[in-house]
Length: 143
Image 1 (tube, rainbow, N blue to C red):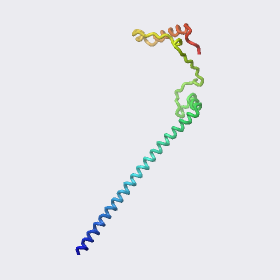
Image 2: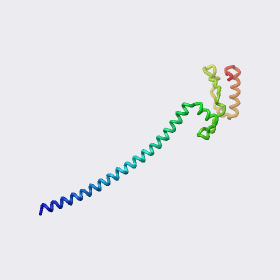
Image 3: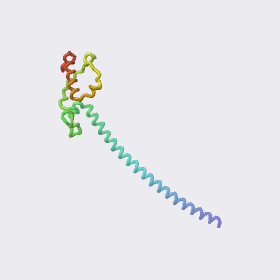
Image 4: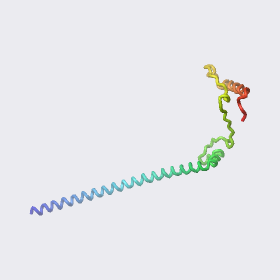
């Protein structure tokens, strides 16, 4: 009889353990499913971000390979497509003269405190007269 009671107790313990293992398996499967859903969600977000980066890189490469096209958009005023509406007109054929060497630089004089406190209008006229003097000395060249 002792043998049978031990056998019944062992059988009950096995059934309890089987039930606990079933619960553990169910919990594990649920957690794995949640984890897979999280990975899928992160994957979708990353694909969206990479698609955005890919589009930006394509636009940059197109602009780099077609600089005339992008410059034309800027000068024509392509603000409807994301361009700057405040672009400067007439930059298609700019003429720039670079003056090199110290002999091309007008003499610079330090400003006194009084001169620094002069209003912009008066100081502007003063600088114009200095510029005229510089031109008379023949250091400035025409464009």
